[in-house]
Length: 460
Ligand SMILES: [Zn+2]
Image (cartoon, rainbow, N blue to C red; front, side):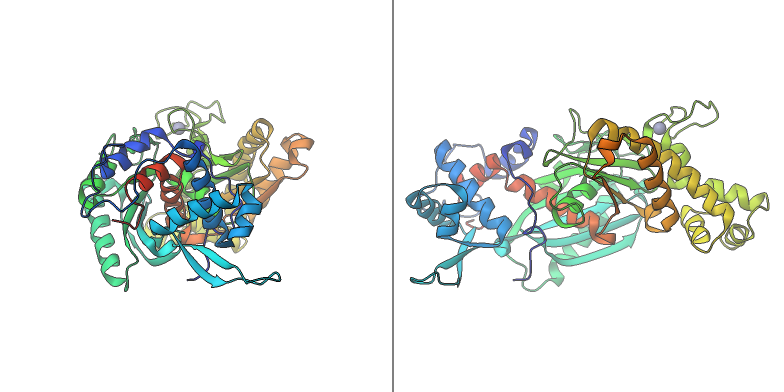
């Protein structure tokens, strides 16, 4: 087994990570809790039944220790969890019986008989994940610790609507599953990221500006019906934040803002060691903070003066195109002549090659973004800001100007140890994050209770 994406994460795993609304998705798959009904497709495993609260607490603690640390011996578990030796042994027996943990290699001896290491069975099942962008689809199959077994990306417009887009996602899922040999265990969950606001409990997009036809579309129900497995949906920015936090540059930080600058602008927030989605799931929608009082700046959300309308990818492309048409930048003019339009990427490339007009466009966007982030820093006091998304990938000018504005405009105490870094996961951030989202939900306390009751992830 290769190294785990999530094993090194110091992320806390607590019952707070679990969203009650999501229980429906797991319950729909397992049958009603406490019904004692055998799991679909097989008899109930021996000894299976609801665990008393205290036993479940111990079991969750032990499983998550083994899961996040990759491997531990029984005595290490006793030392780390403060649980009694007999309780640890009993819970481990249950986890082995249900196929979630196995005995691995013999660990280093401390004098007596060398201890057996306990390993999380990341190959007890697999996950299907998709990251839908405004102009692309990324799909992947991962293990239960987020390792990517297969990945495929292709250009696709989200504006073709949910039917065509999700049909294509399902085709790609099925192709990918067929191509992986051997495919570990059975399918345990599906995770989907979309480029718009999502009500996390229902898994439905809510009035997404760049996703015509997707408003309240039942993404979860559609995939649950097809695959008979729990399905989780979130917006692309939360997923990016989870990916960076579990497996990227934000590992080990408890308070992080992950800003995505792409076609739109949005932030994912890790607060006190958990993803903060807010009351309805719209936390971090910073692209629609008003930054100018100019009636001519109309945002696609219908409001005036939004950050996104001035500093998002489309705005940068428009500013570049205007400069090209007015003859202020020969480089951007060349891009316009060649493609018939100028994109944010062209502006980034021109800036990288020293074009002063392109540099100025990026700098004014960076100042607006930096001012917004300075307010966020004063309000939220993160230890790390991660800048990701297509626009952020190009030139250093943008990051440097954002950084300078944040330091200039924030309070000294809030910036004393503040790090500002580029996203580290590149093109895989979305699928890694979507996998982390599913894993967080599947291994939350309440969910583990349900799985155990039904015989474990692999016991069916
Ligand atoms: Zn707006």
